[in-house]
Amino acid sequence: MEKVCVTHFTNIKDAEQDLGYKPLKTVAEAMEKCIPYCREQLAIKKKKR
Image 1 (cartoon, rainbow, N blue to C red):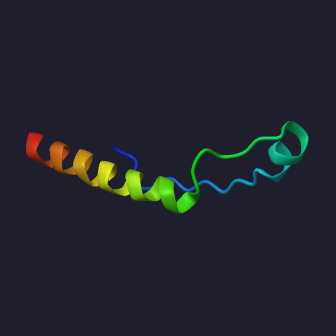
Image 2: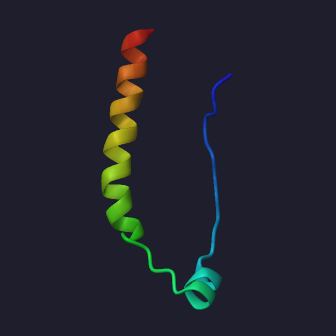
């Protein structure tokens, strides 16, 4: 069985404060790349069936 959905909730405030972590991209920027990639992978998987 394949995973249908995975949900993660995270908070990076500790990493920002304690380690000086700064994300390379905003959530919106990351989603702009992630969503098309996921759609492409899904289309490839459907073609293989």
